[in-house]
Image 1 (cartoon, one colour):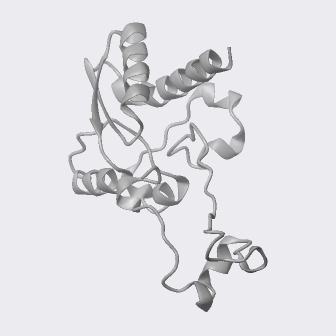
Image 2 (cartoon, rainbow, N blue to C red):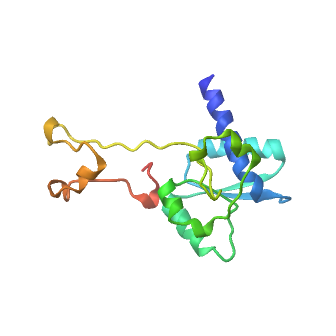
Length: 166
């Protein structure tokens, strides 16, 4: 039941995000770093409901943002479903505002104040450490702790060019 509800919620949110892009178009181009299975499910559901074909270009968030920036004068992408708020906040100039009537049903903090994007999910970021190398009493307790000199050269993070799921 939860899985079915989750799928329906994702489909609805993505459908809402696609509405301003397609107008009377026969095709919508979607850039995303989401898993292929999720993209297929959402694309097929949207196509079945609207009759509009979804062409998906799957690429990392960093790569997608570079492509969107390069296409700023002649965009090829209708919908960008990816990235996190920090990436989007730094690229506002590439996104047009759109305020859906349906967005009223969402928490206000899910929608960028000018309507440039709507959040569809939350990504949990964690700090992990090797218990064989770091004592419990010395572990970082907050993100700011990673800037302490003792952690220099010892912190690893996924490549943001490939998205946070790497």
